[in-house]
View (tube, rainbow, N blue to C red):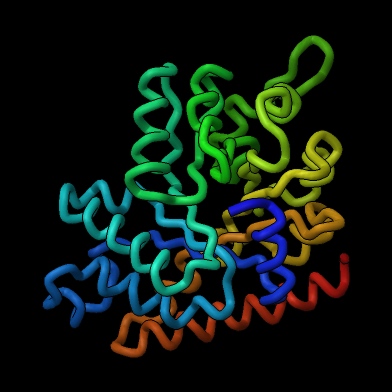
Length: 274
């Protein structure tokens, strides 16, 4: 999916919501455990009820890999279902890969050729040659970890060099020599608040994938105030606040209602800041 195609979906749906499919078999409704593939059954119902209100889905690979082969098959079936039924959705593999070049080449092949997702999250720590293999696919995206929400982000991401440049700023600046805003996005955690202004100074045109809305306490209004650019430039993710809003047999309907609430807020933000 191209940048213009993604922007067209945002405009059409008045939404920049990404639904995180962090599907934990220990948290899904008990009645689904009787299914042959409980994870896929859960995802399918969530997708059907939330698709009108979002523009992207983000399966977190850790939740699937923890179940071995069955989990990986559920991931592949989920992506295939979205591709078949909702081809306008942008699909992100939240895999946080990043290794030496030939290993990254295999990771890129896994997600872009086998799983056929649109984007994959990548860690920048090993530098350009670890990221480059993911950039060899036309129409596919790298979403580079830049400024995260977790407590440990302060261990490294805010370290300053002798000129006062912080490490996350160095990642933003240097990585833009690897790819343009038509092929690279950045992860910036919702709880970083006003720091979005610093991110936008270095990356004014790039999409930002923003986790941390909802259960993690991030403010949608704050993210939009400081992080939205003149095209929107945001994909705001909500996982637990949508998919685990209800543990009964009406879980999917409740998920759809929660997604709709965020879509309504996002429509207001688009009207306010664009």
